[in-house]
Amino acid sequence: MVSANPIIVPLDVSSEQAAISLLNRLPQVNFWKVGLELFVSSGPSILHELKSRQKKIFLDLKFHDIPNTVSGACRAAARYGVDLITLHAAAGKETLQSAQAAAIAGAAESGQPVPRLIAITLLTSLNARHLAFDLKIPLELPEYVLQMALLAQESGLAGAVCSPQEVAQLRQTCGDDFLLVCPGVRPTWAEAGDQRRVVTPAAALRAGANYLVIGRPITAAPDPVAAFERICAELECAELE
Image 1 (spheres, rainbow, N blue to C red):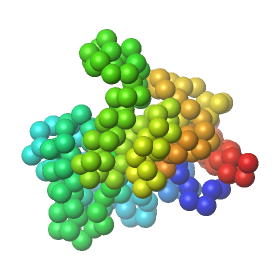
Image 2: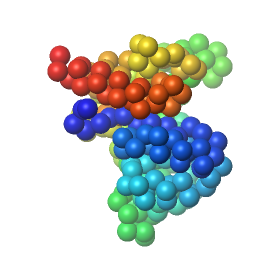
Image 3: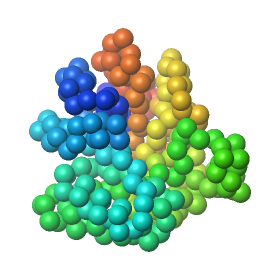
Image 4: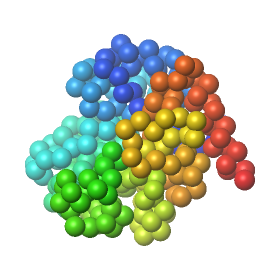
């Protein structure tokens, strides 16, 4: 096992009962992601369940709205004692700055540590063709991702979510203190699924990622514990190389 495990496992299930079942099957996992489907289904009770188990929480709701709405959501989310909160960098600088201030206020009101806000640069289900033809954005994909990450950093956020294919550039430009969380990470023995820009866990860490979001290769495996331990072993071997 790596000394500070960088793996975040998504609770991408449709009910709290299914989430608890997954938690029970994978007690080794310390960091869990709660996304839109589960949060809409279960509400904050799943967050209380994770806190009762002393797990770290990545609240991945990807807020994207006007500044007042996003700041209110971040203020409320901070009261749950979560560790990471996502919002879209494309919401703009005013929204990002007000969200950061609101998260600090919400944490102070509830006596919780201040969560780290991280900005979505570009969803990993999108590629350069989607950016150009669907979204009509005239920037090359790496340039767009970099601009979104820099906007987040300039707005005072702790980090960004990016594909592992862009993480090396962001690490070089944004520095060592900027948190980089990478979905779209797949071991060589797992299917890519609907992720378009994928890299192996070891390669993502070597490129500069802090955390790796790895879901279906673990949770959909015939033996989730064995799959999780296999990835951890691969990361440990990569560290020793």
